[in-house]
Length: 522
Image 1 (tube, one colour):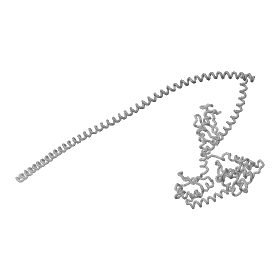
Image 2: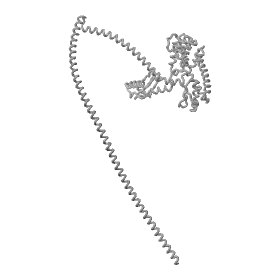
Image 3: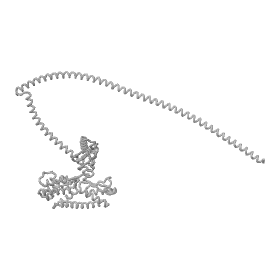
Image 4: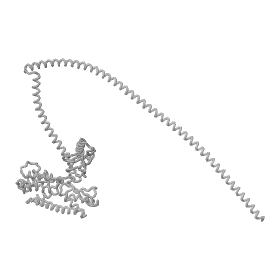
């Protein structure tokens, strides 16, 4: 080996070991310093922890002392309150004992007074007994004297007295019975009037809604807004032009026209339909269409009046009478068209008049015009007979026609035979089956209610409402239900109708129980 290379390697090894020793010394010195620093920090933390523990212990002791003082103070207050309550209770007990003692004194005094009162009462009873004995003796003496004077025995006098009292009592009983009958009649009249008013009040709302409103279909809710207009100007213009109320609510596809005058309501309905179809809705257009519809309705009214007069062959009527007669086309009474009712009355009156040898033309005239007042009874004061009679009299109609209009409801004394004919024809037309009918929905609902109530009873197999709901036929099983039970079911169904339903007139309930046997001959 080259000496220079060996020397270099030796120097490198020496430098390596010296560097390693230096590094190890540096690491040892850093480790020693860190251990010393950590020990110092540990001692400081230990001192701090001990100091905090001493402080917390002192605070706990202080809190315990304060809590003990608070508990002691609360206990002393409670003891003071208990002592005060005890003192109040002692005072109340003392007062109650005093009251009991006073009551005992008063009771003793009352007992002494009662004993003295009983003694006085006993003395009075003895006195009364003595007086009654004396009275009986005097009565017997008087009876003997009366028997001697009258010449009758006691039994004969009693019989005569009883007969006299019986006659007087019969008179008084008859008087009392008549008085009670008059009082009963008065009460029945008052109760009947009250029942009638209650029924009118209960059903006036539904009847008014049915007879004073018309509905108009609206394609969209946007059209409702156009009918109302900006700030309501269109609806105000429409109501002012037609004289009716226009009700627009949340009901989809419907606008309600409300008014008591059927002609105005019809004008409003047709005008509103025209406005909706035209699409141009503003105040000037509303006034134009309402005026146009008014003229059309007026022409239609006059046409209907002439048609009715021509149908029953009543010529020579005044133009005003013709107009009022045509207005009856828009008037209904119990769902019966008044114009058609008037035509029927005219035909019936004329037929009856001709059969008994009276003037048929005059009777038809009176029958046709008898309800003319209904065309204006919402405008004038009074009932339609008076309004119609005054209207006919102003237009110089015959006295028989005027009297028939005024008296066909027996509101005046019947002086003309034609009035009786018209009243009879009016009753016949009004009572014709189907002339005055309920709405189909209400009719069906009432029939279903009758059958449903009957089906609730055990043993009922079938139930049929007939005669427009005036009679119910119930079929029960003969094997399950006896005759006695069938009679009970019939009565129970009738009572249930009276309790749960409201209906005009009467409802006849018939329960049928029968056995059927069928055999086939071969």
